Length: 308
Image 1 (tube, one colour):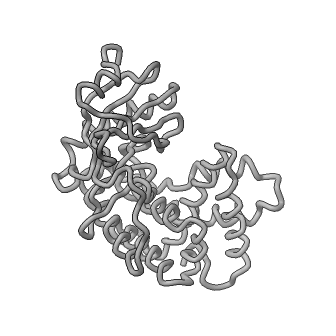
Image 2 (cartoon, rainbow, N blue to C red):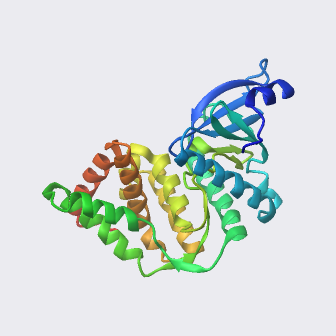
């Protein structure tokens, strides 16, 4: 990065301006959206960092996107940003990427019936990603570290007993299963995925992506992020939308030859991971949601067991 040009020089040469600044998926990173001053549609994105942790994610993204250019089939490669060049942004370091169609605009509000279409499109996209990046088998590690953190943090808390019981039952349910290790996006959520013509047209912000990871993490994270506070409806199957997300996770499990009945365990473990990540940012919103759901799951005799 020592010889990278200054961002201002790049902007002048390409006749671009900074249209917006958004936070990056990785801690310590952010994104500059670049485009023509007369057009609000971004043509480029600059992934930048202001500390060592953030730069590690930007550097990882730079290397990973270069590797994906060789490994992904054309249909999948077209959904991933391409690396343009590295730049200096003041004292920070950055990478210029191509912008994906639809970046800079708010995700369209889901019309009735569109949740299922989007779930199918994301799962089809994940199938391509998994096929093109699959490696050796490994045990499902979804939620393993989250369980350890929760136990260390809440072992002495009587109020957390139900939450710990639910998350450990979920871990026990999936611990004996395995899947091939694949590339994972790491933050697969509506903020980073664009759709068009019934398919995924672009997936942005690969700062948390890693090769050799548990593929169930992406599908579970998509459901947790999409459902938000409605995640309880997914776990109970109390609505058509909730059942759609259930079927999405069950479809991913079937793809890998894992019993589809473990769909609830996958969602619980992804929710635990999101809660632990929130704790690291002093945000207990998801933890509070998880605690309430765990209490409900413990009290229900039917329909909320993590293994059925």
